[in-house]
Structures are given as structure tokens and as C-alpha cells.
Amino acid sequence: MCTERDPWLPDRLLTTERDLLMPLLRRTPEEAYELRTACPGWTARQVLAHCAAALVRIVEGRLEEGVFLPESNARDVAEREDWPLGRILDELERGLTEAGPVIAEHEDGRLDAVALGEWVHAGDVREAFGEPGAYCGDALALALPLLSVTSRRRETPRLVGRLADHPGEVALGNEIEGRPPARFVGDAATLIRLYAGRPLVRTRYALTGATEQELLIYR
Image (cartoon, rainbow, N blue to C red; front, side, top):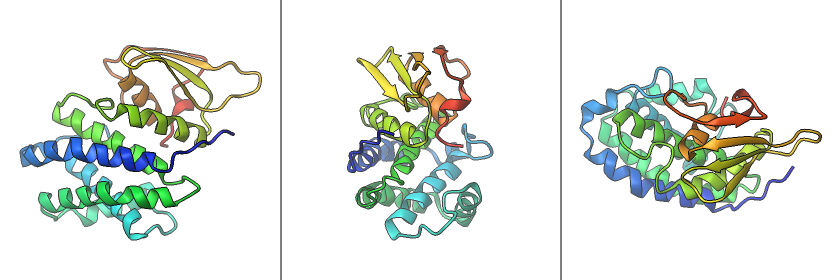
């Protein structure tokens, strides 16, 4: 299986997203953080608490067995329930700044998908806030190559996508003998929604040769 990897791509995605996201978060009224997101049961505040906790675990080397499983994520969020919002945002900014070099040191690339997940969660928050750029925006050019690598590592089938708002074609997943590549036609944000398991309401796309379930990288 092809697994080419740029070890510093996650860092570039995280720091770019830091510079785009943190000013938005700092100026958003606190009551908006209680809005529900596409993540079942989680508000924007809880999504960001999860993001911050995951990144700081990486920074501090607290990656014990079972970390990032749903039960562990829920505990991390619960621990931050009484924190002031500013403390959560400070922790998130620290994680977005410091986690990339640590991820780069892991030669097996197993933490790369965490960086991609952080960017997807930023999209969850943008969508909850009614902001433009959810699951696309200025960091898309960094997220798509990372999705390409992650989709291969997660053993999704080969898909060739033609995006209405991104030049050229994107190739994701792994070739399967005797099975032609699946085809996707639509916009980039919808492609991200498909792979990340986000709601597809009000989207318009064509997918042939694969099911939505086969494309999921986060289960």
C-alpha cells in the first residue's frame, strides 16, 4: 500500500489553522459556544475542549493505550467542563502551535490523522457559528494531501474526485485489484464531509463505484 508522507504537513496545517481560527474564536461571543455541532451530543465549546485536550496530550507525550477512543475523549471533555472559556482557547492555541513538531517525529505517521481531525473539527465549529469556510477555506490545499495519505492508511478504496472549486483531480484511497476507482463530482467541502462522516444535508454531489460507508476515515 502506498503511504508517501510529508512529516511536516500536519504542522503546516495546524499552524495555518491556528492563524485562521483563533482570531474568530477570540472574538465570538461566549453564548455561541453552547450551539450544537455536527458531532452528536457536543457543543462548540465541547468540540474545542476535545481538540485542545487531544493536541496537548500529543505535546506532553500522554498517549497511553486507549487514548482518542470515545471514552477517553469524553473524559477529557468532562475534565474541562468547569474551565473558563479563555483557558480552553489558550490550551487549544498551545496545541495548534506545539503539536506539529511532535507529530513529525512519529515516523509511522500514526498521529497525522489527528491533525486532519483538528481541521475537520474547526469546520464543525465554523458551521455551528454560521461562518463561511466550513470544511474548506484557505487551509484546504494542506488538508487534501493529508486526506490522501490518511485515506490510504485507513484502507478506503481508490476514489478519483473532480472538485468544482479545486483545480485538477484528487486521488484518495487504495487501488483494489479488479475494482475500478470510484468517482466523485462535487465541491471540496462535500468530499471532506463524506470522508469525515459529517451530515450531507443540502449538499449536491455524484458518487459512483463506492458507498459512503466505505469512505469513512473516522469511525
